[in-house]
Image 1 (tube, rainbow, N blue to C red):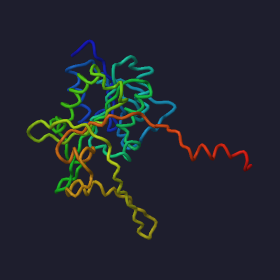
Image 2: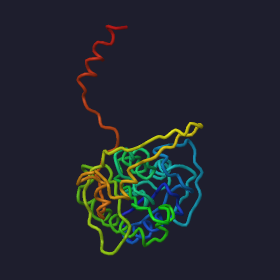
Image 3: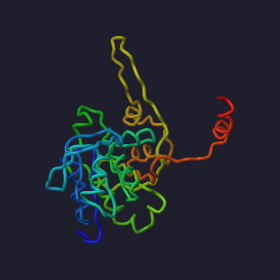
Image 4: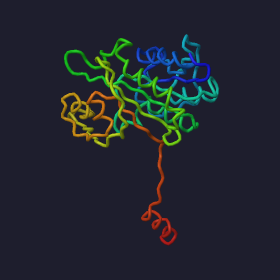
Length: 265
């Protein structure tokens, strides 16, 4: 353990999740790690924030009755200030594509840290699914997360000193499940492919379905080289350097509307 590097570790699967423990143990080899994580599953809550949260001691740090964003705010402001970085994960299930970034509790924790000007890394494991075993019943062994923990440990050790966070505010890391030789890292951009469908059964239920996962399992994925999903499907660790939302640009057409507004009312 390094006395010079301190980390706040959070997630959205809950503090007792297998992937969280695997990442905690891996990072503890190189840093002083304090867990500030949800007490239970808070997947896909985005940046939902509470006004009050209950905190209890946990063997790894603190369990919060709240969201990943709650954990980051409570951690950086009260429970574990002055850390060098925030790491969120390892999530069981990939967080890939531009449209997923705002939904994911894992990614949202990293975004929350970015607003504190604290470098952050969101880490997720791609579980292919398919076959007889549903994807959520896979990746039950810490060894399944080895690619994710190895890549995250490397980035924590080297990215801070290399100036990575002078340009990126957080990194979104997605790793394949461990299967033999170490997977290489590829620097990527989030895919813009969007394939959500909604089917109404005529009896009051609308079923929402993300067809991208079907494409990933079948290998029929149109994502080009350089995108996060393509990298993971090809067995690589995807690392996307990102900035916290939202970017702002001058827009001439909107400027023109603002200038004529008072003439119309």
